[in-house]
Amino acid sequence: MGLMNSTPAKILPAKILIVDDQPANLTLLGNVLNAAGYRVFPVSSGIQALKLLERHVPDLMLLDIRMPGMDGFELLGQIQNLPQCAGIPILFISADDALDSKVRAFELGAVDYLNKPFQAREVLARVGTHLRLHSLQKQLEQQILALEQANQTIHELSIRDELTQLHNRRYFNSQALELLKSLEQENAKVAVVMADIDRFKSINDTFSHPIGDVVLQQVAQILASYSQKADHSRENNLLARFGGEEFALLLPHTSLEGAVQLCENIRQGVEQFSWDEIRPELRVTISLGVASNPPYTLSSLLSWADECLYQAKNRGRNRVYAQRVL
Ligand SMILES: [Mg+2]
Image (cartoon, rainbow, N blue to C red):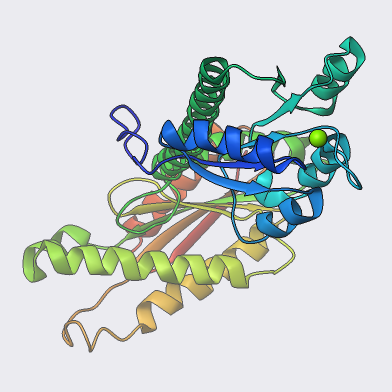
């Protein structure tokens, strides 16, 4: 549904349920509404009305009050229990013009109160107004729903990397700051990993960029599966594509040694992955740098992990290098 240029409501005639125990009233009121183009469902008791509402949901209801058996007030209460009738405008039309009855009708949830004998033009004016208000309200609800869905989509797009479907750097940074704050409060261990695909530029140059994209996606998947596998109780592991071929991983409640072990598993997972289905001659490795606390500042953990990554590259790539933050 378009938000700004929503199409006009469907041109089907509005359906109106009228309930009155007097056949003459039903006929008179029904004729007035019919002549104005409405589709009228006339019934002569509350029981019949409830039966009809099981199969048909009208756009508006006009209820008599004084009826044998179930009166209009009771019928209103029953209708309000029907989920399919939620929000449908209900008007009373009654010979009873006592103030108490009118006030009670509104208190129970009716939107209007018409006196009998009625003036046709007045009935049509009020019915038209309530139908318009109701349709505007429905439109508004749909637009709010569409906006909420659009917001949700925008939010998802804003925190994900499109190619790998991992979280992006912005999300990582904002979440990491909060995580570190709470980890510091419980004086918990934390490790931060920077990982980088080795010689990625040459993969792109040798095998073309689409293959490079596949490599990024596959490595991202390996990282994701290992960082989840590490410990199922740790749902807070934070993984993101940090830059071009660079990934960041924050591991709460993890020692330097635990993080090194995990990184070693990831390194092997990438090294041993078979690219036969993509390009049999393709070889992919990654280097990983690991830093662990103290302190709990994101910037120092990240720059230490980055420094360790640099060391891993310097020492020949396809390896894990780790160091505690001093
Ligand atoms: Mg009556």
